[in-house]
Image (tube, rainbow over all chains, first blue to last red; front, side, top):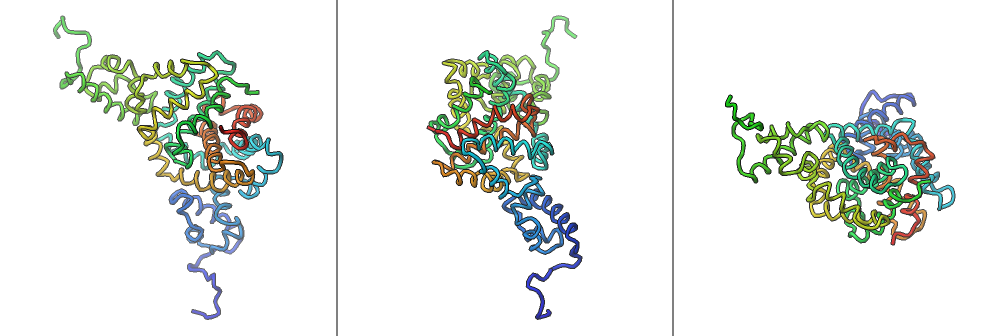
Length: 204
Length: 204
């Protein structure tokens, strides 16, 4: 090979030259590769190869793998580092509010985005949503809430559902530690007051 | 036909006679039919037909569709009506605690049961768990928690994750109303205090 060649010498021909073309090719390739291999398994190199562009372009256009993932799959319109800064920018006692506002502000306009669509498609296949609605919400949670005779029973039932599904996901499905292995007393102390507030507390 | 025949005349031959055989056949058929058609779509009649037994046996052995579903798919060792009574049996201000204790008491011994296994298998295919862990927890939530300098940062991060996933599921994936369409101020008032407690509050 030419001894004076660039160290980031492209391995294949047909690499796109225009910046917007490169960006679009990386986004399309990233959507495919992240879905095929997951976040950890998808390498910057493999995505760049799929797009037919140099791996350095990922850093150039998206600041790295995280930024590319956020843009391509989650469709977050801001860089994750910027999002973290935005969540931390303000009084610590209002961070819960900033999370909800940013979450809704980002995902509502795109209906949950590509990632929610992906989860929706797999849960639809397996009728998971239907089971959750029909059994957990209607048969269990709503009956409990109705017996309590509280205001906003429907809203409370869906709030309780959100926390119970999340607890089930983290403990039994995706198994995030330390919550997945926490003993029952730790779980009760941590989660029960939040469920209690959804059931009988002041929701504003 | 014989005019003196029983009104629950079996439609097919080969119906099992022994009680335990009938129960086992119904449980096996229910697992298949609920997964194929979902909770709403699966009828008592279709499950009984698959099992080759009379539909009346579902009421006899499981008290109806709910009870059969709870036993076959969720593997709840108690009847849903009994579970609702158990959750309501005690002071209203401790209902959050009873939910967490019953939830863990029922599902921990069976590792989340058949339903968690079903969700796990579909999320594993699509690498959803990996994306949630790699991106949401590591890249976003943990960074925020670390900046706050609070105790138990790992536990807090997974608690926040549980509520955020649950909120995303209810709002964008399974779309339970009224939470799915609630305006941002309602969401903030309802959910932000709970996230705030996980981030900076006393977890006991």
